[in-house]
Length: 415
Figure 1 (cartoon, rainbow, N blue to C red):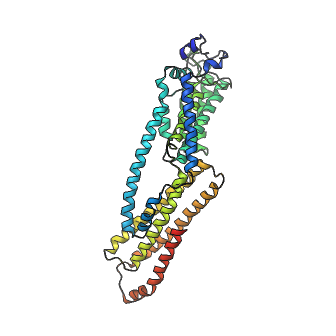
Figure 2: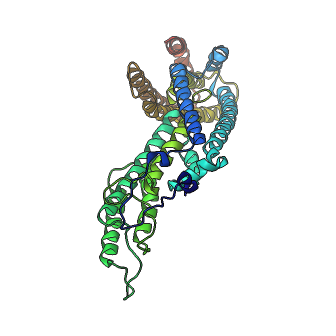
Figure 3: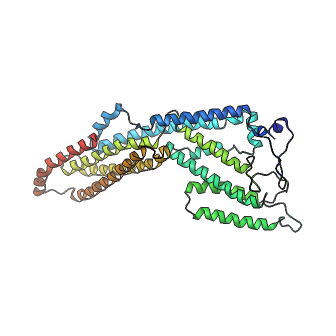
């Protein structure tokens, strides 16, 4: 046990025995552990610095701004091909970047295994580090906001699971013990009360208004904790959880909280370094992207209406509809980024106003896209119809429509 309590002779207490006070120097991690802890704190500080440096900057650079303006003046057919190709390239680069970050920081999370005394300390404290890599993979997302939200769900769920086992172990330390003379567990009422408590807390988590992430993390730990509580065991079995309403820092239940904090913080650092992947920055970037896409969408519909396409109008119209669906998806992604951006700046200072205005942009753009969908519906019924009155009408409204297009470009590109 932790290299015999650093050459001491003290052993872990059993159920039903008083917890002999342990010196904090005996529970303190070894020197290598404090070194790793210092590196962990340094990475957190660096991640925060990078977040504040890049928070107000969008991802789009000045080098491609002119190209994007030219692309916005193209029709939806050309824009759809170019943007899908660019999206595939960006997704590939982003996936490789996230994979490299996850690999590096998972190796750092697994580094205690390389140090004998650090590894022995975790075992002595009954802190289960075997799933720390999985914790990072399950909480790490594409942006800091999404990762922080997932980490909060994991931490909150783990704390709830600790609270559940803390309460039942406070009344019945150690849970159910080995069978008695009649084949029933000693104190069989403990099993009955424990099972009722197990069902009550589980159903409460499922039916009360908890986020799904909190439910998953809480019930994952709660199931394992309660199964150990209900399992008949020897009276002198090691104490894995806090008992008698005293928090036992040297216990598996408390250890889950410690490991969750460490792993979740590493997940957040992984998406913060070397450059942060921010939901706020992604939302700022999508402002220009969505307004450019709407200009392309409306312009293409006007050209269809004015009969300016020499090719098959029906095929062009189909691609315009596909492009509109792309705009709808991008607005949904921007809305999700705006929601997750709260976890990055908590609406402090002017960031709250910026986030509110970004939400207004999404709301306004969705209404505009709905108007475009109505225009598409009207155009689809007129495709293929030719008449002298229609040609005369198109000649009369062509110039006002082109003026509208020019004003729209000026409004969306300069504001």
